[in-house]
Length: 183
Image (cartoon, rainbow, N blue to C red; front, side, top):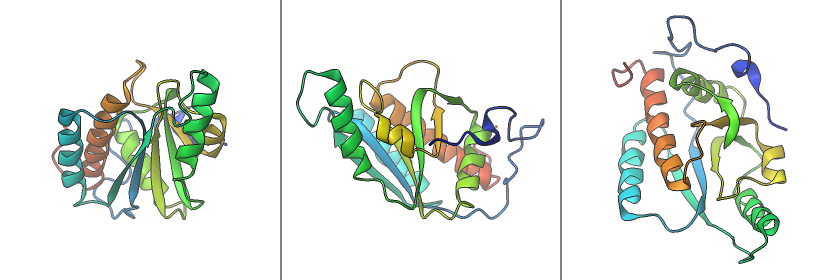
């Protein structure tokens, strides 16, 4: 079951928007980005590679793609279940799972940095970010998620969501390290 922490009621960053971990040592968990969707466009793949290159100075990032509609069905519910099971096969029991969903918690960049910092204190061995297919996430993945967040109140195509997530992860690490990328 997803945990909402203090992210729902009050911002985890102070009034001056400084991250509580800024400039401190943070346990850098490997990150796994699990994406459901079709083949990526060349432009999106170039951006993915660019951000993975930037992130390698902070943590290891694995990019795992799952084919949309693995059961090749026209039934929406069966498609969601098939994608759900395919993604669940890539999640390990010791992973800290962050589900990206349009109905998830709205957090800012500083809160994303704190979420990453907090995940390092959970005893987990990796952080898995899950980006769903065209109809969203299934029941099993929602129950497995530790945190459910959104990147935007608008629905984003999985390729756009991936690029936004990678940029925000890079931004979060620069906040955590006290570097000059974020404001």
